[in-house]
Length: 360
Length: 251
Image (cartoon, rainbow over all chains, first blue to last red; front, top):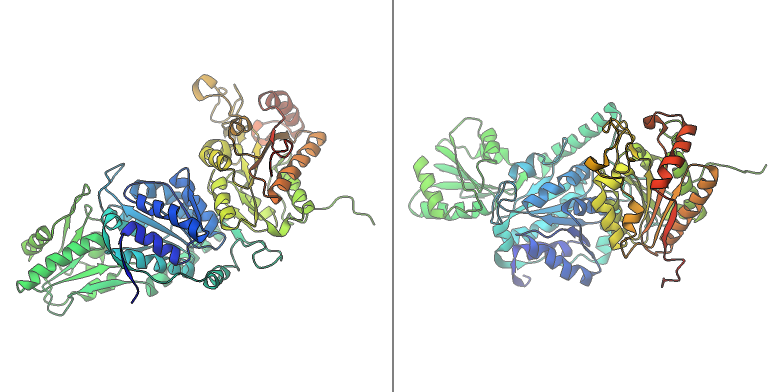
């Protein structure tokens, strides 16, 4: 067992990213993720990494595109309005098959919204956000420990699939302090190996000796037939990701569940408290918590529909976004109820429990 | 047999996609020749813009990236920071650099990023079919200024070298033209100097090429050269705005 350190989520994910071999970080300040950029500003020089406060979210994300094009582990982070600005580059990163990690510490929207926790960027994160047919792999943490663990998972997935990976957290996880245990730092040798795996496609002039190469970091294919092929290749990659990388947590899922709840991230923690209270009173309520929200655990939800399940209850800190995926999974077999909270407000376990009982 | 002219090693053998009389090919060649002469081919990388020269990533024969519209200086920043031992340049047109990419060029210059920027100014958007650029001249007609650029309504042409010359960090800023063989020889010297400074890690270097667009100006290539000399040069004067290498500034 390593040492446990009490840390804010924003700091924990930054520390974990550095330990995972991230030596390039480009970002722009925004609440409620400022501790992340500040932690990077403090720590990157100590590991001889690059911290650069960019002139905008647009520029930061395009710097990520450039560094990712060199096959290096690179990250940016922001909160909702800033992530909207990054969407241009994220589409290019996806189109050019580049590995990169983006952290979204979500806040209330739309527009400038507020600075309290929310989950209103689910559609943006999981269904596109930028232009064109592409997907980010999207990981949704629900504790500071998981937020930190996802940093190395995100870099591994990004490298494995040459794809942007987004960690979809929220202001509550960013600001909350919890004990975290970190993985060890990657060694210099491990980091060299991580770069080398990309040498067949990345910009690496002189890095492997003075030979000549002409690799292209590019998302442009002017010939429609060639672009079609490129987009279908991307789609093949997405289908492989869907087949191999779905992750979810089952909480009290059993053959006698009366109700199955579905929630992700911060919302799922509150739902767990409500379930504990109800089950202590003799109910049998389960929860499926998607950990990857793209690819989405449709099968896990449809398999949880035993004969006794009367309904599915979905809880989100938005007006009903993930619930659309739940409905696809349930496919009309039982009613799907939704309860949301917006404006940066968070529902209480009592409110969640009352909502479950109302529909039971 | 003596070779007196040949294709630079740093260009691929692809045929350029530019219109007859376009000067992008000349600018590409000057950069490729300089890269060859400085022995930089295997440590050079460039960033192509969006615009007519979008395919520059195919024409230069080393690792290349293609950037979103206007973002080349940010992409180059990411590349240079990831690989400080590599030499990095961007190649951008006036719409790309002086309109949508204004923030990126100003801040890359202000940080003194150790990159070279080659800026081709022909006062018009070429690829999209001749729309008004930030460098379009007063009263000049384009498809989006069909009655001529009204400077009271839309502002005057932006002089990028002059603007960047207000910043502390840039190491070398020069405006050259590609309007005559003599001008091209001078431009080559500027390109060589920019890439020499780049090789030596001196700082941010910026070359503006005053150029033409016969197709979208609606004139033949020779008239375009004359028109540019008479109309563009007074607005965008040829000048070596800054050369810290010549000032004996600490290297």
